[in-house]
Structure formats: structure tokens, C-alpha cells
Length: 160
Image (cartoon, rainbow, N blue to C red; front, side):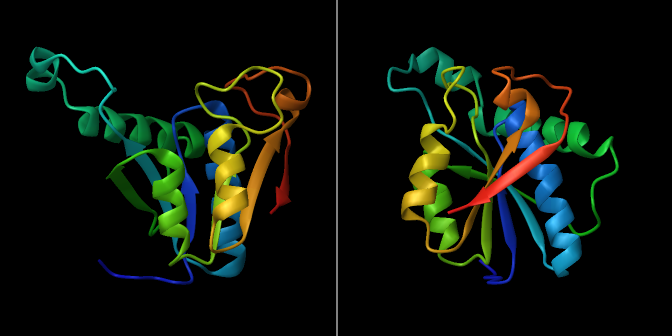
């Protein structure tokens, strides 16, 4: 694997919060003239039916979710040089591992599975606490109002 220590890695899970993080990370990458890598992770559920495993590809589903998020973030015109990565593993440990070889990790404040009203999701909290590079957590106006809409307003961020 080519290690690019000046890259900005953005965690994507298809949530509107991660789409906002992807947009913000692209602006940073352009401003800093840094490579941008959009990463999504996948893993099998704890209880997996053997029939389901034979007929379902979580890696393919994750790749489709990543492609849809990129299309949503950039109106089907992604930044030049954007790297798309689909990795097996749980999100927080996988992103923390990637942070060892990254200049910055960018995340939405809440992904899928978060409780509405929480200021920070479990993945972003774990990454902020354990990452090996700076972590930028992007909040949107809708999150501040207790909404999680696909129509994103202004974004704000904090670093950890």
C-alpha cells in the first residue's frame, strides 16, 4: 500500500453528516494542496446467516454507499484525484489505524446509528480520542437544531 502522509482522510458512512464532512474535507484538500481519500468500512453483522453471506456482498454495498455519498457531496463532479477506499473492519479502529499515515482525519459529528441530539457519535469520539493525527469533526447547522437533513446548511468544525 502506498503511504501518503500528507493525505486528508475523510470517513464516510452515507449519512448526511459524513457527506458534509466530505465536502469540507475537499475544501481543505484544495486549500492545502493535499491528496483526499474518502474511506468507508464494512463488516459482517455479529449473527450472519450462511445463506445471506453467500448471496450478499457488504463490500459491494459499502462501495455503492460511498459512490452515492460522493455523488451527493459533489453533484456528480468529484474533485480531481479523489481516492475512494472500501475497507473491511469496524469504523473507529480502521480509521484510527489509517490516522497513523495521514495528515488529518475528517469526520461528521454523527453517522448512522447515532442518537438524535448527541453532539458526537461513537466513531468520531473514539477517533478524536485515539487518532495519531489531527481530527476535524464537522458539525452542520441541522445537527445543532436537532435535525439530520440531507439538505445541508452551513458547516462548522472543531479539531481534536
